[in-house]
Image 1 (spheres, helix red, strand yellow):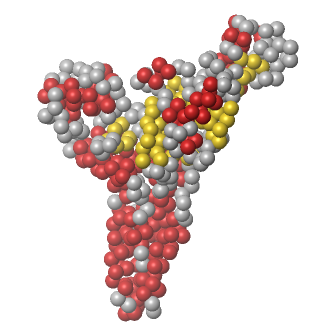
Image 2 (cartoon, one colour):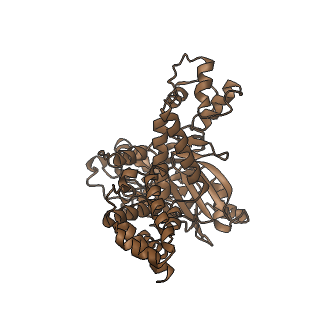
Image 3 (cartoon, one colour):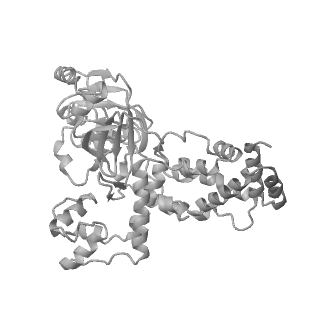
Length: 476
């Protein structure tokens, strides 16, 4: 009996609980002792699934060691760890990410046959530093909660009480000037860093450690949905933080504030493939915006389209701006027109649009409303993402450096709509990280503005979760 066959024979004996079979295998080869140890280690690993935010009870097989139950537990663990739980991944209808890159069931069977079960299981979790740091943070916050958590503060909290609370998450709080420690806390929670104990800061300080741990659990689950090897060239948008980061060759080359969808018209979770850049884009108004927002204005002012440089694509040939249409006879159920806005200073797409074919019709673009980037809360769009640093982003997407800037300026300067394809289509990720780590490895938290964490955690707790709003770029 060769070593691989003996190892598989021994593993089958362990999984089936057959002592006589195990003894027979032991008489054949020394490989059995290692397999016995590996099987025990595998069961112990499943019992520690909670360290990754998984539910260990999902993989518990009891004391019977029934082979079917054990294989089901191993299969469930391998599938959940390698690609996330399928029921959670499909909880929101707007999650469109690449499927797991390997067949976990086939990999498990091969690992058992080859006597490499533990190597297979330990290689399943994401290995990127962000996931590992969040896993460590989960243990830390659970430890804080197990020790009683931190005390609630009142607006009248003393300096000593405030320092003590900050010290749970900031090792330098005790030795730092209090305003500086408060600013660090605020920055790590997406709040204006003014160093004042205002209502928003007090509310964030009083979020229990258990709730912070739950937020990390939700984000660890979403990390398991991600490809294990991110593309070295990519654009990543974190809708929860309203920020964009571009990577070239695996290195960050650009960050930018962005404006994302409001909760009623949320920005989806997806991976798209950038196709090209349109300059001086026209805006075709989505039907939902036309009937809900523009039609009421037309009923009040028949010249509204003309005032906004808009026209009816399929309107009367001698009246493209609908000046003679009786808009009071048109309603949301019989609105037959398509509205388009010319390029120009009133166009909400601004001067640049990154084309990104996808089922939700979301994309990245410029905007004439620059002051909105200064707001603390930037979830105000209809699903698409407005990018503050769109001008340096565009040449990076076209040439992987700034060499295309002159070509871009020339294209914009014409005032005419034009298009340049990307030489290399760049993956663009729309993600939702409400817990992540900063450059120093310190955990940061953001508000669950779309309720994704709430729904995911409710599903984990087997509670009924409210359905997500269907996303889409219904307006810039």
